[in-house]
Image (cartoon, rainbow, N blue to C red; front, side, top):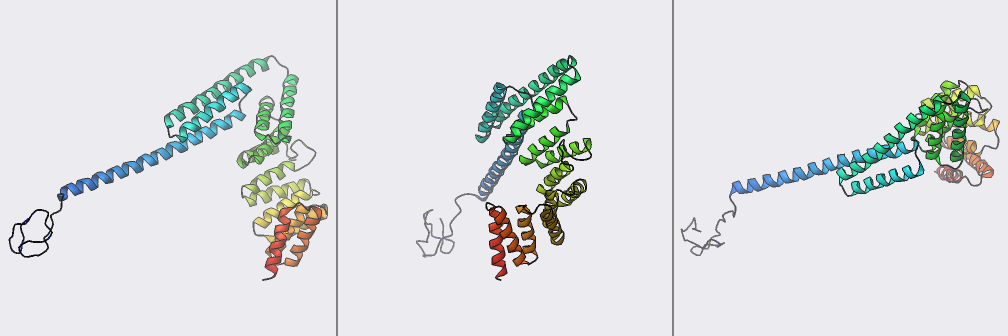
Length: 336
């Protein structure tokens, strides 16, 4: 390496000139064009890795949705226990393959399960038509009732998926069975599938304008649907349904308590308190109404009234944890 100052010819790896002692300007070990090429190659590699990760994430979500849809199809299809077991094994295998990111294998497994369900569903429909052609209307209604009663047993044991499957069978035979729509709607509600619950309650109401849901309680269907709207945060629709339930059954305390909660969550505390007052008037031992009215009083700064209500709720239902928590909060806020 030649020194630019004195012209002395130094070794290539020298840092200082042996002739004049000045620091030598080092040559870059790689030509500039090679550096640019390397940077470009690394950038392409990084972009490709990001692309693969993004693509993998999309496929993973598609497989997940396919798996969930197939799982839900089990409860709406007439299947034997062995068939259900076989399908569930396929689903579990699909989940395992998805975790390993072998999406082709996962898709193949879940498709096998889906195809089997579709095949069994078609076979069931074909057989049902043949059987129904030979049955009287009374026979069909009797079988439908048995499926409905089977669903009630599952429902009472909180086996909501099994209950839904039984109610489906009942309604396949008798599409106008109002009580089955309501019970299936409640099953969906307790499974937190509020859209399907609302759909079923609506169908029940369309078939029985009193909204009794096949019971002696007028307005029950509107109350159920109102609770579904409330649970999904649609308080305006909930208030509308609870109001209709009150019109049909003005002496039912729970209708007022439910509408009061919808008013409360809408920020309309005065109307909420009026509804809670009415609920308590109709049912002086309704602990939930005292607890709810207490939260409304607390919201408007009426802490003494709130604490009194929480005390009453606790007296009526010593196991109501929320009443203790609300009382503690009111005490805390009243000290500020």
